[in-house]
Length: 388
Image (cartoon, rainbow, N blue to C red):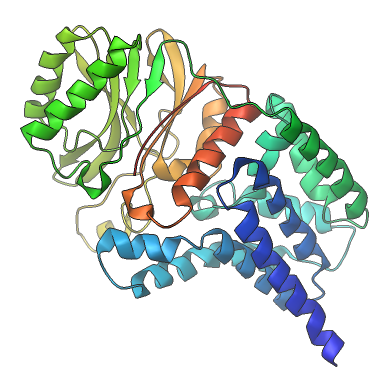
């Protein structure tokens, strides 16, 4: 009887360890997440498969409760509730599609992986093992994604040890020759350490400090300078005039995060301010953070507010005669925004975020690792700008 309970307990603890290590924020540890499909497949009952899925997902997203508590300046309970609610989709999909029939198990897992990639379940499709494709198959592009998908399917079959050995060999080879994505020529991402004040403290002094930061970057030869998410605060005519007026003093085009508010809600955007004094909305975030930003239920009750989700619009943007794939904050944690962008073959990736609320967690490190993995998979240069 004891042995009947020991196996499920070991599987659950192993899934937690896989979630913690694989999603620790260390780039080259992402392939550890490939242990999840193995553990899911060798679960002997549907209930154990659900508990394995829950252990993996909750461990991977372990920073969420503390982050939410910091963001709202509240106790831990709202964060715990959101943490548990976010896991329901992942657990439900893997619960329903689990099977003890080996002949159909690879197809079932493939279906689960696809469902967790695209909306609606893909909206909370964090910690997707396929993100590790960038570590195992750097530069292979869509072929690498295909081989990674085949590898995931192979990990839920009887021959999973052989598949795992092959993937571990690729992992070691990649780790031995690993190089970070390079910056596009003339581009510079600026990391800031301004905490919660960025985007909230919008007085003239702060704007002038940011303008000075851009000028310093431009003085080092940068022609395009990227500032983090919400760096400019609310994008108003006054702020626009200040920045366009200052742009004539520098040869750089500024790409910066801002917030555009109207009567029905707001957009989380990237603004482009060129050296000729012009400005435009470059990109509208496709998937804001569910719950804290994107709140679609407000419209059900006739209320306004919350960030708009543009889902499948503007996957690439044109800037400086080249095409960029923008990713704002939460979009770096899920799969479909970057894959949608890559369908249009951009020249490089721009990843920005404002992670002040993640202090004490690995969330920003995970975002950076995921963005780097996707850039490496498709051999694209990468520009990153974060505030912490």
